Image (cartoon, rainbow, N blue to C red; front, side):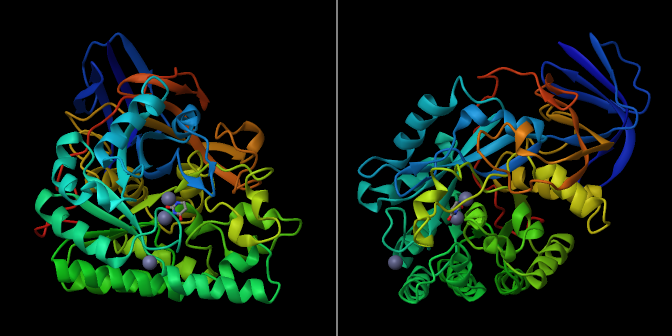
Length: 466
Ligand code: DUC
Ligand code: ZN
Ligand code: ZN
Ligand code: ZN
C-alpha cells in the first residue's frame, strides 16, 4: 500500500515547511517539495497542518481505586479522534507475581485484538517481595523500559516508601530503565485529610485543600535527592505546581538527568472547578489536585522554556454517576483521575497555539516527539521523518466546535472540558499509513493497534538534549 500526502504544512519539533510525504508499507519513505512519486492513493492536505501522531505517555486503561476500575482499551478510539496514535498504559504489578509476567498477561488479555491505536506499557511496582529489583534489568528486553512508583496514597496497595524508590533507581540506572514517580507526600496528605474530615469538610473541594502544592513540592524534592544519591535519572509525572517545576529546573541546571511532564488539565482547569455544586466538583478530583492561576501560568512558561518535557492526559475513565459517587459523603473515597485522552490536542491547540503561548513546533515536541523519545519509542514514533512510522495527523485549523460529551468516544459519562470552544480538529488520522479517522470520525477497527516495545536509555543519561 502506498500513499502520497501532498501540499500540507509539515510541523516537526524543530520547524515547519511545505512538503509532500510518501508512505509505503506503513513507513514514511520520502519527504520533499512537489514529490514526483506514484502512489495508490493521493491525499490533498492543502490548508492542513501535518503533524506526527500524538504519543500520550500517561494513560490509564486499568487504574483501580477502592476496587473500582476505569474504562479500558475498548475506548482507545478516543485517542485516535484526538490525534493520538500511541498510548502508554500503566500496569499495576499483581501482588505475588513478577512485573514482566503481569504486563505480558495484561497485554494479551486487555490490549491485543482490542486496541485501536498503537500501545506500549509502563510497569508499576507494588510488590518488591517477588524479586522485582532483579527484574528491572530484564525490563528493556521485554520492551517495558519504564517503571512508575507511587509516593502518594498512604495505606493503598501501590504506595511505595523511599527504600523501594532508592533500590529501584540503583538497578534502573545500569539497565537504562527510567524510574517515574508520582510525587506527593502520603503522610502529610493523610494528616490534612483527617483534619478536614474531623471538621466535617467532606465535599470534593477538600480534596484540593488536603493536597496543597507543598505536599507535591516536598515529594518532588525528595525524589530528586534520592536520584542524586543513587546517581540515577528520574522522570516526575504530572507536575502541577511552581515549586515542583523549580525543583526540577534546579536539578537540571546542576546537570542532573531529572525530567518532568505536566498534563492538559493542569494548564487549563483551575481548583475552583472542585467547588461546583451538586457534587459536580467530583468530576475534577485528580491527583495532584487542580491548582490556581499563578501555578497554571507558570506551567505555560515551563513548557515554553523546556523546563518540562511532555504534556500528557493522565486519562482516567471513571464515571461520575456510580464511581465518583463512592465519595459522596467523604471526598477521600472519590476515585482520583479524570478523562482527557480525546481532548489533549484540541485543547492544547486552542489554549496554547491559538493564543500564542506556544508555537506549533513546541506543541508537536510536547505532544509527540519528546514523549516518544523519553519512553524509548523515538526511532519510530513522534516525528515526521523518513524511516518513521506513518502516524500522521492532518489538523484542520479552520474547524470550530464545542466540546461535548455527547460526541465523545471516551466511554465516560462526563467530559472535563464540556462547553469549551475548540479551534481546529484532527481531520484525518493515519496509523502506520492506514486511515483511521476521516472528517473527524473514527473509521478504523478494533485490534488495529499494535504493541510497540520501548527501548532502554530512552531517558538520556549523558548530556543528550532534553
Ligand atoms: N495518579 C495518576 O497518575 N493517575 C491517576 C491517579 C493518580 O494518582
Ligand atoms: Zn509510606
Ligand atoms: Zn499519579
Ligand atoms: Zn496517571
